[in-house]
Length: 118
Image (cartoon, rainbow, N blue to C red; front, side):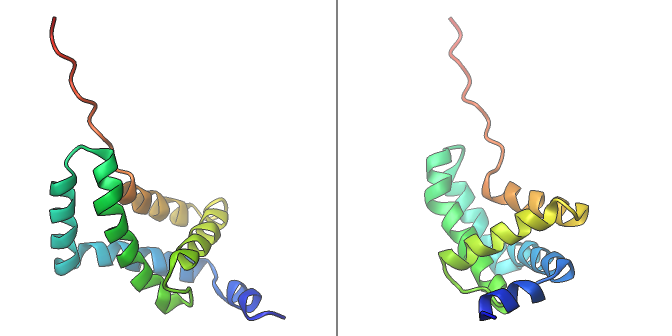
């Protein structure tokens, strides 16, 4: 049995909920919150800037948390975590709710630019 398969078997819904809660709490830690707010202010309502400035910072914070749950601290670990959470949210409404809250940080609502009055 591969180590990866064993890991996936041990990462249950309770650990998934805890990981999501820890990620959301990490976003609210004073130092991270200030860094995120600065990045969001810099990006403004520009989705491209948001993807260039805010998204990497959120991902960096997330990687720091999921590492303690056995995921690698890289893009592969983030993708693996996201895939497992996506599978689990179908059967666990609390995981779905927490994951929706997490996604809202990554893809916030954007206000469409107002059209000029003619």
